Picture 1 (cartoon, each protein chain N blue to C red):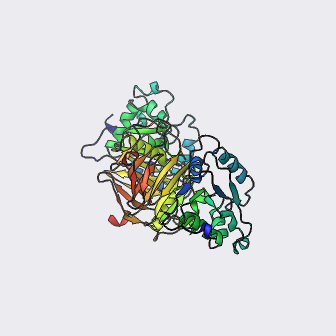
Picture 2 (cartoon, rainbow over the protein chains, first blue to last red; picture 1 turned 90 degrees about the vertical axis):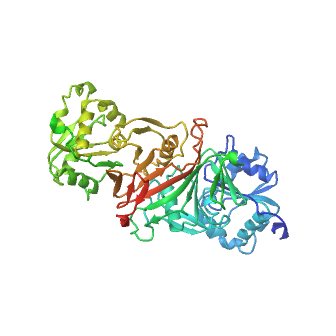
Picture 3 (cartoon, rainbow over the protein chains, first blue to last red; picture 1 turned 45 degrees about the horizontal axis):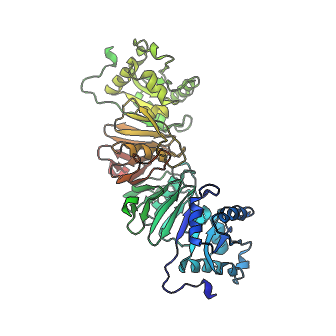
Length: 274
Length: 274
């Protein structure tokens, strides 16, 4: 299947990481960013995160049609075993991008990680294709993904469950529906566990478009970056699970549309810096 | 009324700033801190923040009785005019402390600021008495208090209403019910408006006990400190009101019980620092 292998000299494609509930009927700033990169070619819509994918595809098909994306195929995995022989990989032939919709990030990782489908996704990325994901589809892009943890409460040390993700976006941990579900506490908890990892909380109808080692913010909400590299103290390893997190000297950035971020330098890029 | 005037050589008393919904039936860590400072003397329970104060007094009277605080008098203001001649100031005679309960912080400021009651509160503080406040009673302690602003959403620039508070706690702005109502966005917005002001978000059943230029955290939740002194960019003054806040290089501290904070140096104090 050379048509999904990397082309020599091609840079990896962009990642579009969306916090969920992106506008599908108005200006569609985020879906438009997908359409601009797909440019009338084929988009794979992966509804694999959902236990009941009916309706997801139709809603996106209608939203994308008006943006010029008319060739859309659905990827859904009922049984992991159905994928292992590469039976579903024809879906990716000539695809310009793939878009993972919402649901449960553990369904994405458990159903496709380590299968020929994951290899096909990586190949699309490696040859310059777009990999987009919203909500669970966003969470699954990091090395380690947040699976469960309370919102609207300050972080309790034992209250966080993580799992290995697809690893398309290394060294960061994504949280989605970020402000809407009051998730700053759990993202701080995740960063406290390993402050080398950058925490990136993405609001609903908001996205980061990652190209190379920088990203830019799109959409109506904010992207909150939690940089724990300067943390001087936390109790994450010492205290009992029911204890509240203590964490000193976090660097925080709140980014809005037009702002960017240099992932290598861990520095925000204001629009004026461009 | 020399009995409520400052005594020479006395340091101002502590402030106890509570994020609301402090435990009233269990360990009562926070109410116990009040009881320890009142030491069996008179406590004024100011229910002035509430439009319907019935029940507040009874609940606290019962909770405090078991902690040895048996002399409690209620301060409620139906009409500001009833206070202006000092008619209610006998309530403060020999009081060891005052505790402002919850409701609307604008009721506290509009009903008692600039009246002989406020002067009596300041006098109790100046002579070493305890000033405590929960929820609205906490918010009212700062120079400028948050009155209204959305929770569980990243801050929109025009979405914040502030008003002058009692000013017992200068140079900080308090937000209460902090994690529970997802208020990090609005506190960041408040600090963006004037980064000299330190933002202090107090969770429910959590408090800061301020003595001199330091505070210590009590209770089950977290205290989030937003230090904007190093902010390198924000769009608070430029963007349209409906735009999302952008704010780079915020310093954030999450403090739990036992942690302290040096307000002059803007540095957290870990328990081991004591």
